[in-house]
Length: 215
Image (cartoon, rainbow, N blue to C red):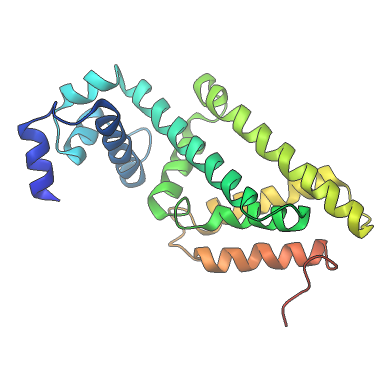
């Protein structure tokens, strides 16, 4: 790691722009996890990346622009991951719903650093313009997909459930497992495998005909 950083510092403009930007985004996630949103500085990110602060500003005009890019990258990665998981599950609504919900706890997106970065954003900037501009559409899309899949499963099974409330409950459970149980400050009380078990058990409770409880 040290030799790679020294090489970067020695020739800071050799990496392609997208590669360098991703390096800075990754470094910012690491610093966010360690220091939180308010305490993070451009100098911290530069040091983590093994680059100069000038290189950070060259790629991102300000700390705010850098943080917005990080949030957008996290949100896009999250959406792409659950979409791919759902599409890979086939055509049955129950299979797609389970794949979508359990994908939240795959190690690609469910890591200590990324969880801590999400918590840092939620705690500091939720409700602020750039957070809403980036996340509102992603959140609405996810909720709409979950609700529609719940609607189809409920119709298939004849369950006496409200699709919107059921979807909201499932999504809130996922959020709680991320923030309350797996996030920074909780010492990883539940790992990804255990979180998947909790979500699977909840699906079995809501939709017993589609997800038989495992004895």
